Image (tube, rainbow, N blue to C red; front, side, top):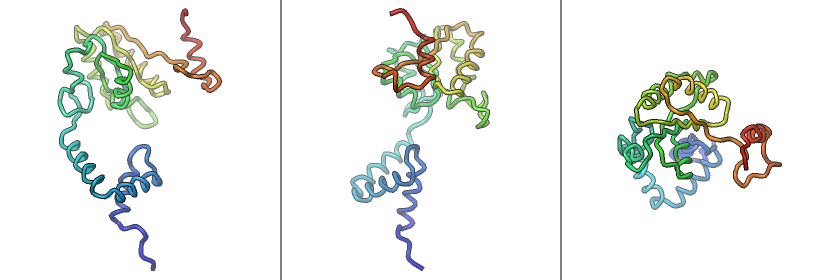
Length: 200
């Protein structure tokens, strides 16, 4: 019987990296080879950063953001507009909106409603959102869930739950992206853009 080509230690590293989103087996092998070629100069700082992140980073008890502080830096920043809450599915969506220079506060649901995946309202941070929406300083809730069936379903459910709170509920606009060419857009995007047209 031939000896294995890859040692169990290397194979274990490949298997761990392959579990990361966006990294399949081939990408995990390439990443592993890169780390091994760089040796301790790459692996030791990475190991230290992972250990420190595991020890220090935690979810914010108010919005659900990941930070070394609880409440997080966004929730405690006095320059943020406390009257606006932007509801997003995941922390990655918060990071995306930060690139757009949004200056309000956030609420992270932790996913979307999905009958197929067995995710119901109790599995998401919707009750916390309703509690926050009742605060006297909150006047607007921006629903920034993704434009998927589950994202839309979640937005409609949240809208129903917030009716009693007396806040303005808005939704991110959908349609033609900046710099987009009509010929390359899907039918759903074009239909939404036509319905959401406004004076020029």
